[in-house]
Image (cartoon, chains in turn brown, cyan):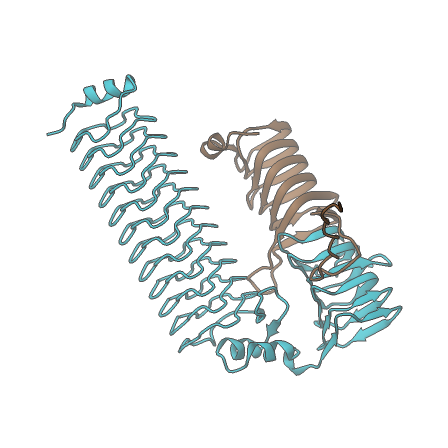
Length: 141
Length: 417
């Protein structure tokens, strides 16, 4: 687990015009305005509007406004921008907002798979309460 | 005259000795290494601490009035109840610092970093926080009267119950901020980003929010008395119980707003009904129950079960399902609204056509793709979707709220069959 104070102070920055190929492991948040093609392991990944990440990513948090493709595993994901074909996103929490500009797409999705939260079950609606478990009774003497 | 010289102070700190309650007024400690120093209750009025390294230092109850702290490193420092009135903290790093009940009246914090800082009950009236970064900071019940926050980053900060009267937040990013019960009376917030912010029960009387982004904001029971909202974006805003006063609402930009009391998106209101609801001319519940543009609402109530049915709805239909549907197909006309309520469950079903679909309940596909050609698909925080979504040629507008559950495959618009 990365030291949050250290993570706050330092960032690994892939600037616009820079292309990185290979495996990137960082204890600092990774901010990508250029391109990464490969693997990323970090506390968080931010992809700016000019950025692109293609490959295998395992991070705590993803905030993407750019282009992503590949396999993405994270605790939380917030998306805008573009999700390319052949992409899998696995996360506990996904946030995608509608665009405030009418007619404009906030996120453009290619062929992709989203695995978000626990596996849903068909038993009941979100508002219905599960049947109560029987309450434990005091032992009979 | 200070009790100690710079050299004496540094020597004491090197030895780990406390300077608690020392008189250090006017002392020059610029760029000094003071990490973790105990400066509790010291008098540093007018001191020069430019670029000083005070990371983790204890400055609780100290006096730093008119002190010069430009670019000082105050990360994780304890400044609880410190007096920083008129201090210059421009570009200081105060991330994670504690400033509970601190006095920052008239202080300058331009470009300072206050990420994760804790400032409950702090005095910030007339302070300059232009361009400062207050992301996830806690500034609840603070006094920010006439404070300048132009261009500041205040994303997901907790500002509950704070007083922003006549403050300036123009172009500030307050996305996802908690402003419930806050006073924003007379605030100047043209172009401010308040998307997803919680402004419930906030006082916005006389606020200027021209062209502000209030997309998805929670404005339930907020008071708008004579606020300026021309060009403000309110799509998806929660507006139940809003008190409009004399606020002109004709200039707002919104595809829909949520008129439900719970703010769960279950009462989407569109078209002319938006202004009717927000101006109080139509009861929220009545407007919500009326289908958009006068179309008749089709409602499938809780407890009902529908099996093997083929249903077709026209372009102006508004369909709400709180029932259980099994092996049904639903064809939606272009622009029709389908809302699966929190108790609605669609099992082995298929939905086709260019409608707007909102899912608060559950959807499980039968034949694949389970959802084909939707113009818009919203899955709320209570919603679940298992299945394939085939986008239409001009792509689907998606919205997923944190908390939703998905096992979803999205097919590219160009693969439209």
